[in-house]
Amino acid sequence: MKDIGFQRFYLIVLLVIITTFPIKADDEYFTHNRAAFSGTLTSSDSYSLEMSYHYMFCKFVGVGGALGYWSNYYDDGWASGSNWNIDEDDNRPSNFYLRPSVVLKSPSVRFKQTQWCLYAEPGIMLNVPYQQVSIEKTQNWTHTEYDYISTNKGQWFAIDVRLGINMDIGPCGFSAGYMMSNLDIYSQYRHLSYNGTTFEKFYPKKPFMQGAYLTLSYNF
Image (cartoon, rainbow, N blue to C red):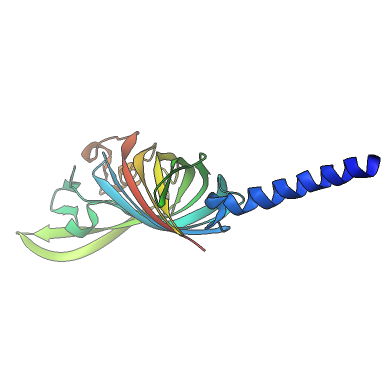
């Protein structure tokens, strides 16, 4: 009788294993490697583009980082003085950055061939702590020569987070939503000075940034 009981128990366990694993459609395209290309558009009149990689420990959590570039696209100030001004090409701040981050996904909901889930990606933006700009010196409205100034001051460390919805179609993914950051894009410029004139009064303070992001990813 005991043997019959154990046989039934093992048979039930075997049936559970056989019938459970094949129907896990969510795991069909799961791999540990996730590469992505992202772009943001922000309230600070700036945009960013980045390439990232994350190692997914499971379907819900991944750790990795990105290499990116951000730039201001609108002149919201112009440093100038007696017979000098910042060069037009350098008047819009920009920088390269590294961004270590964590990918967090909720359990997904299947709709036809797609899977939908909530998405979060908190990260830390590490900007290059160095900025150099060109000063255009003029005389009688004629360009005469250029001078260069640089600084290692200003904000080079920022915290940001992206919150949105993620859709996966096979190994390909798409995520879009809201982003916020404490990056101040004019921070390094406000620490510059030339001929005794500081740049702080020329550029606004924007300690809080928000906007939208879009990410295309591929799991391999």
